[in-house]
Length: 286
Image (cartoon, rainbow, N blue to C red; front, side):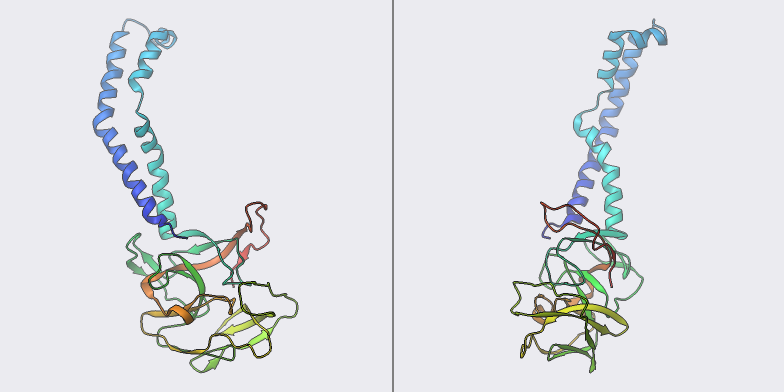
């Protein structure tokens, strides 16, 4: 997603807010004077006679009429403020655009992200003003990668100070392997972009978090390997679709200030525009 929606919402709030204030300060008094003048003009009529008099009704409507920009400003400003507040501080919806988190999240899943799980941040500038909790190993996190303006979603594998190793397709954190157990009841989702002819789905135990991953199962295949020392104030992220994920193995560590929130639920799946939305993937994210 390339659009900076918080910034767009903020600009719209400023525009509609200024429009509302201008109308309140400059035009509303003029309209009030116009209404008083109409009432004075038809002061000889009773209330029932006024309401039935076409001239009075037309003149009153003309005196009360707001310009379109003022009407739209007054209508949209409170709605935009509520939406901006909810998505900035509470919960924000996202759509999964790629297969990097298969099998946990599928392309077309709509997810809800808890924006205050790790602390309250000021919109736009992203400065944390109220710390609440720290990200945990195994969390599914929405963030901005280094030197990127697009949202990414991955699983947090390495905390500040951790040593992360990948040896023979197994993740080691501080020399402790994240055990993998293939799941025969789940079929891998074939991913044509990944360089592997065969995949398996497995349970991976990462600290106290048990979750699904998908990895290559071809004999002799070895994915991206290496050792990474996570610096303070940074995190190491990986996709659950281990052999088709652009993550910290390739572009480095995620600064703490780049974290947007914790993904906690799938609420809708809409795989393609021509298909119907459904709730097949709805549920909490493991």
